[in-house]
Amino acid sequence: MSRRKRTAGLDLGTSRVTAIIGEVDDYGQVQLLGVGEAPAEGLRKGVVVNIDKTVVAIQAATVAAERMAGLRIESAVCTLGGPHLASQNSRGVVAVSRDHGFEVREEDVERVIEAARAVSVPSDRQVIHVLPRSFTVDGQDGVRDAVGMTGQRLEVETHIVTAAQTSLHNVVKCVHQSGFDVEEVVAHGLASGEGVLTANEVDLGVCLVDIGAETTDVVLYAEGSVLRMAVLPVGGNHVTNDIAIGLRTTPADAETLKLNYGHTLPDVIPPEERIEVRQVGGDRIQAMPRRFLAEIIGPRMREIFQMAREEMRKSSYDGRLPAGVVVTGGAARLMGTTDAAQAVFDSAVRLGLPCGVGGLADRAGGPSFAAAVGLVKWGARSAPVAVLAGVRGAHSPAIGTAYQRTVRWLRDFF
Ligand SMILES: Nc1ncnc2c1ncn2[C@@H]1O[C@H](COP(=O)(O)OP(=O)(O)O)[C@@H](O)[C@H]1O
Ligand SMILES: [Mg+2]
Image (cartoon, rainbow, N blue to C red; front, side):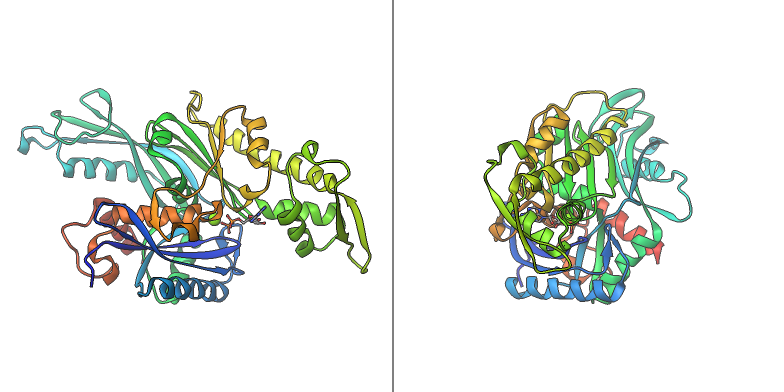
């Protein structure tokens, strides 16, 4: 068996479950080996509401990915979505050990991050990410890498993401019942950011907006780390519902109209263009201007972007966004989406497509694959070579600290 590092990502979306198997090649690049998808019926607004249906979807998606890759997986990095995700800032402070001449070592950095993790969260919530933003050594702030510096007092500014324990538990349960171990749980928005953003954008300051089926993730990054994350309870399916009500047709027909003729900007649609709409409660087909469709879609998409902008404004970050806004997620495929976002944010907007991977990248190229591809990249950064032996397998010295921490919390959790 190849000793190359392999990782699997399992994105539990409201509309579908996506499984991707990847491998890190000799040059450190992630190559996608297998991609599998299955419609999900057991989730609502990013949260599991039916275990059995979710298990069926996970198994169908993983079997397809395994078949394409020609190998089996035992564990996966999984997304966790839903408006129950919340984020807050947290500080940690520790004294640097005297034993090594007050030189900050890896252990001190881990201790200070643990200290930041120890914020009081309600008993029904669980910390899923502790993202270090910057360190302060003896009052000198803005330190990105504290290891090797000399000082007596080490502080860290972190951003913490918490999740409702029941939602987390149900995701882990579904993955276990499907026959896999959970290596790590990643907030859907962070996975998506990992999938489509460049290091440069994250350094400069960028706002990621992932519009899924029933949720929209908003993640604000600056100076190389996350400043704020929020999940809005709206998404592409709300657009479909608006169309169904507005044109008096079924949700299925409304979805087809949206996919085939949808646009966010009525003004660019020639007035003479017509679409045929089958009305509910009869077989009558009515022709109407395609503009009607855009007049329904436009306001809803703008509303989603306005809500995202409000979330961004709630952050303490008052700087501009030099790298602008990146819009991704399945609903970003709607024509005119970036123009609608541009009008609301009044800054540069680009469509976020999965990047930085090779192999079967074309099989996972659209914006709806942002999070799934991001999971594989995330797993490739933190997973050890022995990962396919499962979470409870051998602990190689190569295990990253982030990975160890996750395994620790997963253990605490059960
Ligand atoms: N070509 C398209 N044009 C417009 N909307 C689309 C298109 N393809 C998918 N969508 C919408 O994207 C949403 C699903 O996005 P996705 O990111 O896969 O969601 P989730 O991660 O929540 O499962 C649905 O609302 C769907 O209608
Ligand atoms: Mg998604």
